[in-house]
Image 1 (tube, helix red, strand yellow):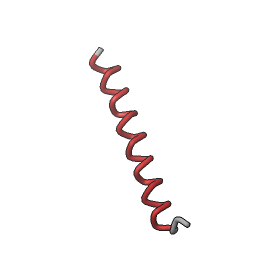
Image 2: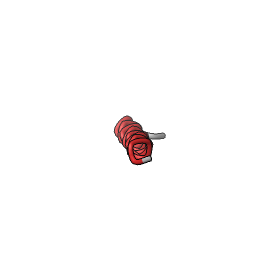
Image 3: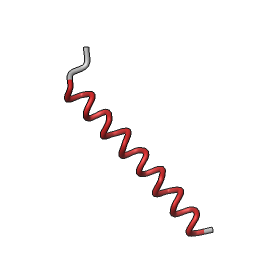
Image 4: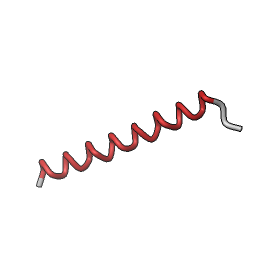
Length: 32
């Protein structure tokens, strides 16, 4: 059973990964 803390940290990690992906897409679109 996952605790609430581990679920929240997982969500934060997923958000961080999505933001990194978006930043990369924005950088590529600006650079090209």
